[in-house]
Image 1 (cartoon, each protein chain N blue to C red):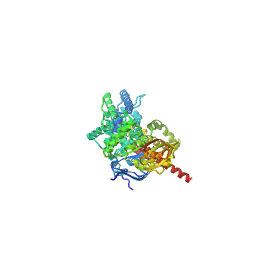
Image 2 (cartoon, chains in turn yellow, green; image 1 turned 60 degrees about the horizontal axis):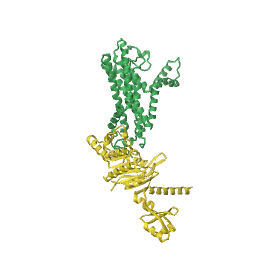
Image 3 (cartoon, rainbow over the protein chains, first blue to last red; image 1 turned 60 degrees about the vertical axis):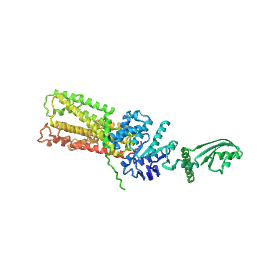
Image 4 (cartoon, rainbow over the protein chains, first blue to last red; image 1 turned 90 degrees about the horizontal axis):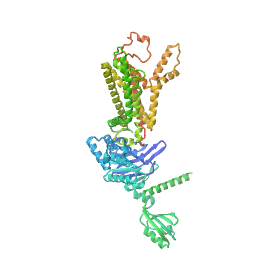
Length: 319
Length: 319
């Protein structure tokens, strides 16, 4: 399978500030790809570069094999875009707003009208189609933005913070919609700073920090790569030297002190039976043990903490 | 590397222009300004008719004097139009681009398969369309009032002069539309761009005629014994005054609606040799007289639009 979106050494500078720093992305057809990172880490700029709405300082972009700078109309007719905090013309109804977009996209007449109805009912806005958008809630606006992407019948949807500012229920609804679009074969690129939310829908993610991509890959691969394991066991015990006891155990990838008599054990499998046996065999008293899968948030925090520490170390050495 | 873009920059142009025009036609802001114009126009023409009826002198161009006759305390119809047309244009254009930023609709619209060129040009053409419709309606209204109340149809030459005046007014309004569009791309806040445009309007319509002699006197010393220095002063003063579109518009209305106007600058006695004083100029001569003014205003429109275009093309889309 050939990638539908590909960037090669993409750089965008604003004056002396580098917003995007040598980003290499490759998104396969039918994939849900997440761009994750805190605000101001270069996600939106990368998206604008993908759409050709801003020019790269260096590097190149290919969308469906086309250059968004030289063939912008061809690219933009195949790509749907939902901007961060999408805006509509408040004085117009939902239907009129979509009709305007449809005309700009080159759809006319009854064909457009039919597709508008389909798109609106798909995002469950059909009953408010003739209400002014000014009366819409944040969640309804986001859904209307998604209806626009559906209306265009786009191959690729680029969604910038699609769940930003939504309540949990609206977020869930929107994610289900995105999931169903992906199921139908639409390639989806979405950006978010809410990592746990993205974990549920994304096949692969790229972690952004200060304009660079730190890590790319499947969520499960990233957790094991960064945290050394996909499981984290909290052990509360007394009367035994837990790090020493668990030192050579199978599957255990790391042990850290989490408090007095409390340890955090990273593992790439469920190792609770071994831990219990070893502590008891060593004569210790096991008081409590809990396990949970690690989330992307922890991967993110841990990974960039490490890079930050390395950076500080380097700076200190340099000084 | 050639940076040739594919696709026509006019894709979507008519869609945007028509949508803009429809928006303006239904906006309360424009309704208010047009109501103001309508009331003043009716008032001025009604007063002029009263004045015309009171005088018994014969006039070959009675219908044109409908537009130019003033009765204290009301100014004439053309004076009103020269004062208020810029206001209409500013109301149409001051939030053209920055309003789209603030409503967060810009990135969504530009993600459709159109060029930025079409967006700005569409905004401008939409505004011009509204101005054209309003001016034509106003002109027909005034003509109708004249026919009804004076009981006299306009002659052929009067109609042509009237249409030429309509064109002049249209271009004059176009200059101000371009001015407000420039400000709407330069400033992010619609209030700032509206104030900037209104400030320029006040300077040019009220203060410029006072400033012109002051500026001229800084460059040319008048020697009471040297007529050439006086002539130089007048020429320079006129040159400076003509920077204001208001001056150009006044001269054009004078040349078109007062057929006896022979020149706008100082005239020497030698030039009046063999002239029949007080006799009207043929239409072709009047048109030739105002042509430089009209060309100057069209040039101003093109120049201002280019400034708006360049500044808009360089702008970042991110809101």
